[in-house]
Amino acid sequence: MKVVYIIPGAGDSFYCGNCFRDNLQASALRKMGHDVIIMPLYLPLKNEAFKTNSPLFFPATTYFVAQKFFQKMTMPNWMKRLLGTDSMLSFASSMSGTTSAKGMEKMTMSMIEGDNPAFLKEVKQLTEWLKYEKPDVVHISTSLLIGIAKAIKTEINIPVVCSLLDEEVWIDSMKESYIDMAWKAIGQNLQYVDKLTTVSNYYKDYAQTKVPEIKHLEVIYPGIDLDVYKPGAQVENPTIGFFYRLNKKNGLDILAKAFVCLKKKNTIPNLKLKIGGGFTSQDKSFINKVKKILAAYIDDVEFVNSYSMSDHIEFYQSISVLSVPLTFNEGISVYTCEALACGIPSVEPKTGAFPEVIENGGVLYEPNNSDELCNALEYLLENKDRYDQAAKNARNRAIQLFDDKYMAQKLLTIYESIQ
Image 1 (cartoon, rainbow, N blue to C red):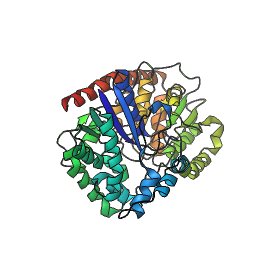
Image 2: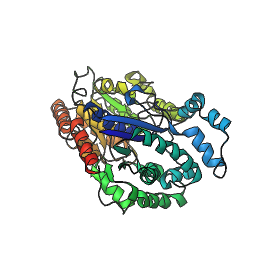
Image 3: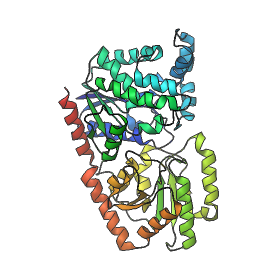
């Protein structure tokens, strides 16, 4: 089967959960012998793990300017060439990673509604390319791009699958006048989608409250290659790991305060903290604040200053427990799924999909409270028998739910049902 995945490029400088989920799905299907094309929008995906094999459509620099200034007239070719150069896209990549849609409401709505002039010019190139490639299915990774489904069904009538995941993180940061408009437009354009998927029962229930038009939403958990992600040797010193983008929304400062609390208690001898997952230029001032929190114990902290998808397994196998104290509800924590596969327990807030994912493979605590996190980490790490049982449960949980072979088969079943 030939499948085209349409995903928004976010640059390659940090752990993007949605990007990584898309790559897991594509990789699992490729392992089964299927032809999968990853089509990035906005920014190129330079990491070799994606094996990107399509042109870049809706380049961020060109499309942003087109939305601002060229709705009623054609952008000059010289300007298109200038804005689309590698240097301009590289600059945009270095500035990417914002979690706020403020200032980009019109651009966001154009991708959801799929009918303004600048959008139609860009999507025409995309559909022409799809006509040439002739995929069996197009899988759009987020309903924030659902306007493309409208164009595909109107122009070439290829079966379309659309995933829903964490759209509210972006939509709810828009100006208030746009929020209801965005959810309603997603609901209206569901008519152009043959099947909808999501990644957890938590997000299934949440999405249906936001978009009442959703009638059936198939849950497909992230799939991890369990032959590659597996338990390694136990680390010499107990080590707490943080592995996600280093920003405030992901709660790194909460973990830093909890680590200081544990070091002061000194109930876990030789305790270490390892921090990775990447960051953007926007995050640097926040990271400096975190370093000030950790200053008294900075010798026991390791900051991993670079990020690559190829580093994931090595990171998990260098820690004892994972903790990413998110300050918002997340539809799925792919990093937790990875850690569980490596037999690494997680200590996470009782929010979003964490309870569904972790179950007995770790400890849950009351969110946004560093003292609660400190106590939860201490509870897990101070008792070897308790820790060993949680580690065993973690691996078993991954085997039950997060096998990439099972994920790929569920995807294929969906694709075949709409042929």
